[in-house]
Length: 207
Length: 156
Image (tube, rainbow over all chains, first blue to last red; front, side, top):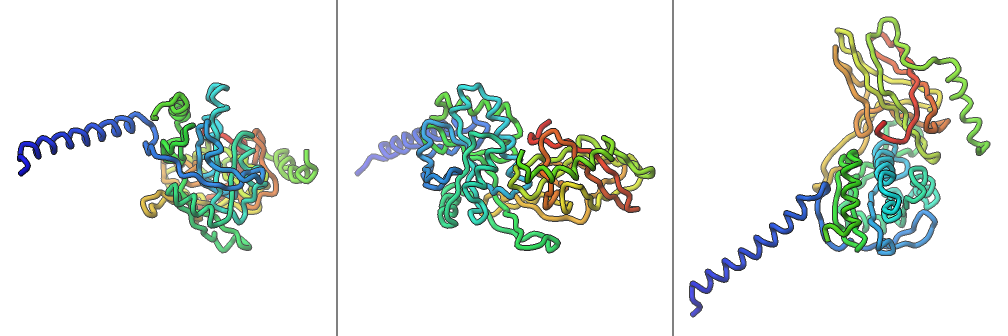
């Protein structure tokens, strides 16, 4: 027969452990501007803006700021990329080289590597774009909880013109390959805070 | 410069010759248009957008109903849509018939909000270019032409 005292003591210990773990997690998350995720970044293989097969894990050693969009996007994506360019430009030169902005298209039908290169290159020559088959893109989007759907525009517009409704989060992948942080698009407007957080991740914070 | 793009800039240049800078409000329109700008976009894009602050200094509501610009085939009023799908915030656009500026009030057209979409670009505005955009208001169908600088950055 197990002593009730032993059961109570064990339960209490377990409770303490869980609480301590939870507090530690909460503390780590609370200190960040973005939402703390802290899990291994799901890897993927796509085609980059130069037509080269590239994996996310090839970018280890750099802090990757990743976002989903499409080059015909006239509204959200130009804001996202202009903000990311301004944030990166505000970093010390040494750190700029350690940050990689990665734009993954949700419109592989129109977004060839060439179109991506022209598009992301307009904002910064260092930005990368990636495309792939519709299935490959769908898999990556699913792994990161991104959502997109094509929408035909108003009938006034001739032809098969369509836009895409899409989620516009920014995913912060640490240099060690951890999917560390998730940012709502609106958060990019505060360049100084974003820059501060990038510096911290580059310094190994959050690991 | 790529010759293919050169001729595209001509209409913009000619338009700039004829239109002075700043807002030219119609006599009867009690309007102030400030912080207007056009988004400089990559050459691959077919569309751009214009943003501004419109203040109605009069005692009756005004409606922005449309516009035109020499750099685009068509101008449409758009709103940014936000919905939640499976717990994910999804952004999109939807065309609207007008943007109302209540009496003694103002409307801000900004990225991620309402804006004028400049569709089927025939010239791509470069940062620093001045782009004339003519806005149409109701009641009365009066127009106002505003010279808007093109820029990439969202913040000034």
